[in-house]
Length: 388
Image 1 (cartoon, one colour):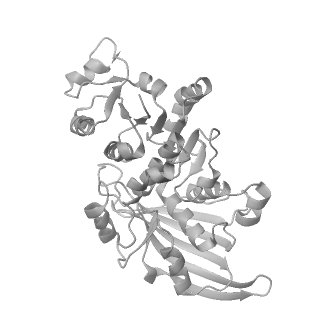
Image 2: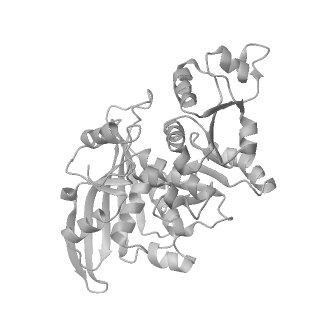
Image 3: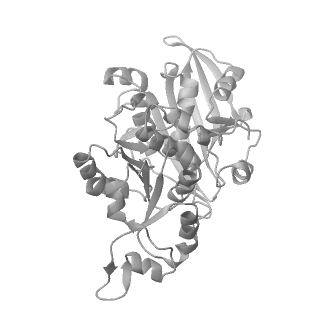
């Protein structure tokens, strides 16, 4: 049958991912793309028709009826609701796909791993693995494209956790400015100003600013915790990790978050303290030297967002962050104990969904063949932009 990728979930990540996998299926070395849909809701008929028309295969749960009433799932229920004829049942796809990408809402990926993916991995040595998105901390090895490929181990890492869009932003800034092994990083703090909802969502919008709590006693919010976990995979020992990033109870990466009444983009304020003296031009050159970072002259999210809408894949920017060099401020100092230091302040725009999509496709390609994944995702890397 060839390489088979199954996507669970058709929301803001799942739907464009299905579109990307079907559009670039040949270049990615994928023979079959299938996806799960649980309930035959009338408002999703058009979306599913488009995905099937592009070559994805619809999979549904077995027939379920409520107390002898109308069917709530199963092939007949979907056909009665006007959907394309399902190709197979979801349990068959879970049991047969080479790679499974879970794009369901928060917490469900962990549950699906326990129910479906881990038992499959235990009994089937040919199962390449499963990938989860965003807020599924603990699902598997944390991953972001071009951040920690060297930490992935063939045959061992069958469960991969693609980190959230803001974690991508934080991690790429830390590696760009702190060094590939974070050898220049003394400390860092990030304030994530999150959009209230996606443009495709009706609920969750707010009229103003909503302050977030610091729910993590050590990191502040999950953004720093997830970035710490991601970057920790770069170190061979806990001692080395603690020397660079600090121990988990005394980390050198902290974060805060709030939510703003906008549907465009998240924005992050970064405050980094680096070892040594660094000029503004040197900092900008380091940012410009990272292929997944885009520079812009724009200061506002509507215009950055509009570039993705007009020129990105499905309206999305695949870069991990977007920075206006004019927001970069450099403050040199000298400590009698630690020597020369440079504090960096900057603002960055987070291409939500898009940066996670790039890492998701890279993770799929890596699970299918770690030796050739970089060449096969060239077809997706072309969506990266250098200037916005």
